[in-house]
Amino acid sequence: MVRGFWADIVNSPYFSYGQEVFGEPERTRFYKEVNYQKVYSNTDISEYTVQSYIHKLQELTKYIFPFERIKHLLGDDYDSPEEKKKKAEEKKRKEEEKKQEELTTVEEVTDEQAEQIENQKKKDIDLD
Image (cartoon, rainbow, N blue to C red):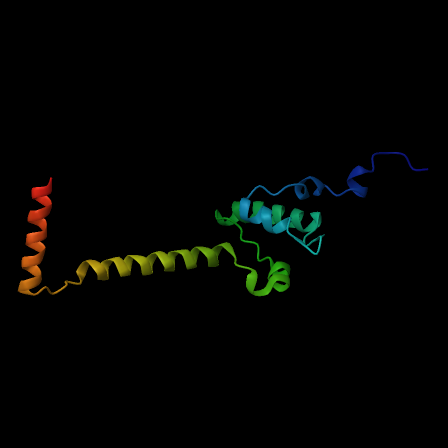
């Protein structure tokens, strides 16, 4: 029988890093289940957490995990946060362009139509 403290040999010191993910898009992806089985284990979460801390210290930017397993399993249903952001920006840009086109287009009105519009406005004012 060997006496002494064996916890750091039996259990790695990174055990605590694999318990929880604090960033929201990463959290849902790490704890994703496919066919009632987890895609990523605590080991993967530990590696991500330690790597993200190192990356933040070196680069001063957020570490982006590739999530290759989920991409492989879900295929076209998977959208990374960057892809979702790009799609949302593209949609917003198209909507703004459409609004600009609507504002810049001038509808031609004939003299008869202009008289009808003026008469309608007068009627509306008289009714008030």
